[in-house]
Length: 602
Ligand code: AMP
Image 1 (spheres, protein in one colour):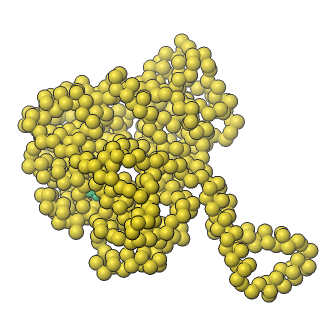
Image 2 (image 1 turned 30 degrees about the vertical axis):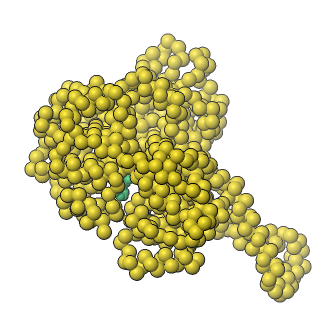
Image 3 (image 1 turned 180 degrees about the horizontal axis):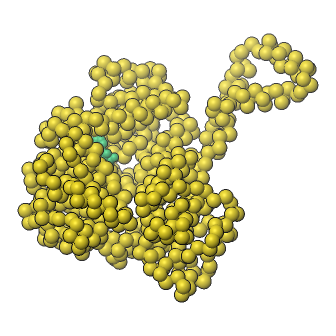
């Protein structure tokens, strides 16, 4: 099913084979429009935000057109942040997995130069970089743009906001006039329009049509959540929400299988529905959902097309749909036959803009919901337990069991209440009635007010952020890298934000010592996330993250990166560059030992 749709856009067999491996079922609207134009060599102006599939929209056609014999860089992709550079480079690597001798290199500040220089010397076809670091390489003449055949500006408005626009223009001016150009931006401020006019010539414009469609009788909620926390959030929702049938939408065929398996392992009656399954198997799955043998179907858009099952009380958009059309289509699977329907949408902080555009085009607001707390899950389990217990008391003949309990009570001289409690304890071990959930830190992006303010004021890397009084309590962690390793606060912020998908606003105070660093991170981070963070490298050194026991004070006294007096000058410069956003009043002092939540960084 997938191969034909992507092949119809003009992509070759190697790329199609990679997409098949990845489980892509159909092109997203922005891909449908962009791919043929870029394959035809046209310049492109794409108005698209994160979540629309914009990366594949430019990467697939450009990778498809690579010259396998050219060793010097052929495609240059500029991104505003290190995180995005890595993400785009990884996407290119996965789309080009069937191309021989393919090399892509992400280059960004804060990373050791030596490795980048060596990789560039070895030869790469695609360079994905932040403007500052690309400029560094141009100055050193370690990056040659003479044979660049295509340049992409990804998230151009973000680059403008971050003060990179002059660098971007310089880089564009250095690329050959003949190079193909594509610019993707969520918004089109005047400065971006000007770049488009100056450097894109007669570009074709693609954007997602925002048709207005309304949906009634469906209560719509969204949950702002990091990618790592989606599964935990979903299981909590499944526990506390009263539902009949449910469809969970994901983007790829492989995710349908993965997620359905994980839900089954957690005791839910779930199954996957995707375009790889035979028609017969798909029909069987739908019938099982209809007759209640299954409660949850995890589906792709293609597989769920036209699905009409009355008992679907909930649609969960586990992965955000590419556009409003698809959103309306998906949630229309519930609220059938005059019943009430519920739609829950997972939105990662970066996808907030897409949420806004869905709300705008449906002219309906989607209410924010909170992650069900551990307490709510516990209450729900206790209630179910009570019901089951009462039903057993009412329906089962318990005489023989009563006699047994009475015997034990007599023999052991224990109270029947103790026996009952011990039995409840045993019975709930697999699914604890009082689970120890540690609530993950809330996924938040910077408030809109701050985003707007920083648009007026260009900045090199990060700008001060406001202190959010709702920030969670923090706890202290230690990393085994410090001044000796050339570490700066921005390296720590970048590495953690990137690995943990924690909004950098939630990375607290950073203190860099000679051979180690301490950082405040939100309390109660999930165990898997910590395990993941333990493998993190900073400036190419293993960071070996560990928690500092409460009350323990790291020694020796650190050099502080804060505006704390004349001695802090050097540190302060790094601090500003890294964009630490401590808003403490001058003279407040460090207060490190107090272990009060620190809501900013130094
Ligand atoms: P983007 O909007 O480029 O940030 O893409 C968001 C996510 O959608 C990424 O995880 C992609 O792997 C995924 N994605 C993009 N295009 C498709 C597609 N046609 N089918 C399935 N997943 C896709």
